[in-house]
Length: 34
Image (cartoon, rainbow, N blue to C red):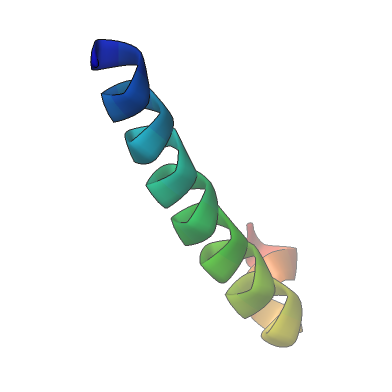
C-alpha cells in the first residue's frame, strides 16, 4: 500500500516538473536567467 502511495506522489511530482520545464522552454528569457 505504501509503495502505491509513493508511486502516486512521484507521478504527480513528475507531471508538475514537466509543466515547469515546458513553461521555462516557452519563456526563453526566464530559461536564460535560470
